Each structure stands twice: as structure tokens, then as C-alpha cells.
Length: 224
Length: 223
Image (cartoon, rainbow over all chains, first blue to last red):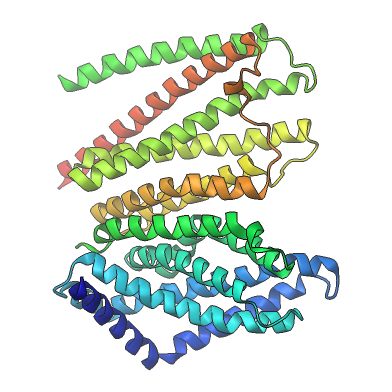
């Protein structure tokens, strides 16, 4: 068990270092996320009640689109420099590579969401301290990362690459987006925990199912 | 030898499908009484539901064949999965066309973001991605592997998508078929129509599989 943890950690560490050294990816993903927030605002009259009802949708559209953009890079960068072969030569099981990549994607999207969400709250004049929103962000991000990491590996090996990931990713994460939007709406309305339970359960179920399924099918995506 | 046997099978299926389709058309347009509240437009129901059923059946076949392909690595399973996905796509597209036609007459709107419509649309988008992955991959074996992965993940996703959308919206009539809410004559028309479309599905998949096999054979002969 300890050996497994060390192996996953080694992959994660490599990802974090290469992520830190190429700061332009996180910067551009963040700027993109902010742009989505701002652009979606133009679609609705400011100050009207419709704006409040669509606020959760705007936040999750921004996080989902920024997430896709970031996820695209997790395997595209490996492919460009033929690093994928090196990674596959690692003396570890294939699913360890998936878990390392998953952890890295999870941290990456979480970081993006952690910066976008407060800006969103400020722009919409909402209270800044929302621990329940943080829980939703964590659960939804894990859902995005589980499907995203698997299909990022797949999309990187197709002809359309960057175009392929959103086409694969977005229809599959529909349940996460619905649950996150609905739960966020309930939090912003100040409703009790009990009301959100169903949505949290859907996200937890999605996370558990797709981390397990992806663990099994990942090796078929990366085999040569 | 094998070809002769296949043709015989095909002929039997074709005859059966033809007879069933004629019977279904007779039942739908002549035999079944017109529904009281919705009027004659309700007859589209006998096409809409069988199409939706066959669409789901097709994607279930994709799921099973995808698992078998990844497990056994026999190209046969991949050929069936690919053919079934194509036919399923056609049927699901027809569901999305017949649905709004019926909705416009029954609800007064083309499209409502209700449970079944939205879930069908999400399903349709997942299998568009399935067909795209295959055509955007350079090597055939890699495309087959990628498609199989999506065929598995996509189908597992379907119930979760349906559940999330169900909690989000509900306007579509419930499954009256299993609750005995359907008159016996209507149930008969529906069942015959389902049988006819299922045979049509098997025929179409059979055609696609043999076409694909001929294509592979041609490539092999060309060298």
C-alpha cells in the first residue's frame, strides 16, 4: 500500500513540477475562466432577478470550460515531446499513472476554481465565506478530473486533439454540471443542508463510479 | 458456404421484418382507435416509442460488444459495436425528430427541457462523440480501442445522466406502458411496432457488419 502511494506521489510530483515550470498554462486557463464569467454577464440584464437565477450556471460554465482547456494540456504536452513513451516506461502499473495524472488534474482544476469562485462572488455581490460551496467545488472538480484525465489521454492520440476533448468531455459530465448548478443555487439561496443532499449524492456517486471505471479502462487508452 | 447461410438468414429476417412492418402499419393507421384527448397525432406514439427502445437496445449492444472487444480483442466485436452505434444513432435521431412533432401538437411547444427529451439529447451527443472518435483516429485498431472505451464509459453514464435530469425537470408522460394505462388495442399496436423495428434494427446492423467485412476483405486483397 505504501509502495502504491509513493508511486502515485512520484507521478503527481513530476506533474506539479512541470506545471510550475510552465506557468503560462494556468495563467491562460484562469484568464479564460474569467472571460467566460464576464462574457456570460453580457447575456443578462444587470441587477434583474434573472441574473441571480442564472448566477450558478455562469459559475459552472466558467469552471467547466476552463477545466476542459486545462485538461487538454495534461496529455497534449506529453505527446508533443514524446514524453508519453517515457511515462509508459515507468516501472509502475498503468492505473498508477492514471491516479497520478488524476491527482494533478484535480489539484489544477481546484486551483482554478479556487480563484474563479471568489471573483464570481464579488462580481455578483454575494457573501464571500461559503464553506458549503467549497464542498460542491471539491466534489464537482473530482468528477471533472476523473472523466477529463481519461479522455485527455484519448483525445491526445486523435487527429482532432484539442477539439476532441470538449466533444467527449462535456456530454459525459452533464450530471455533474446539473448537480453542481442546482446545489450552488440552493447554497446561494441560504437553504439548509438537507435540501442539497440529493445533488451531493449524485456528485459523490459520479465521482466514485468514474474513478473506478476509468482506472480499469485507462490501460486500453494508453497501450501501444 | 458461410455466405450462403448468411443470405438465407437474411432472407428469413427480411421476410419477417416486412410482414411485421406491414402488420404494424395496419394496426397503427387502421386498427387502433384514435386517442381521445390528443387526436390523430397520438399515432406517432407507435413510431416514437419503438424508435427510442431500439436506440437504447443499440447502445446496450455497443456497450456489451465494447467490453467483449477489449477483453477478447476479436475484431468481430468491434465491427458489431460500430455498426450498432451507427444504426442506434439513426434511430435516436428519429426519436429527436418525432418527439418535437408530437410535442408541438400535444404540449404546444416544439421542445421542452424535460426529463426524457433532455436525456435523449445527452445520449445522442455522447454517441456522436463515439462515432467521431473512430473517424478521427489514424490507425484502425486504436480507433476501435478508443471507441470501445467510450462505448463503455458512455453507457455507464446514461443512467446517471437520466437520474440527474429527472430530478432537474419532469414534464414528459410517465411510462404508461408498464402501469397498464394503455388500452389493449393500443398495447398490441405498440408491441407489434416494437417487434417490427427490432427486426429492422437487426437487419440494418447485419447489413452494416457485412459491408464492413467486405471493406476489410477488399483492403486485404488490395494489399
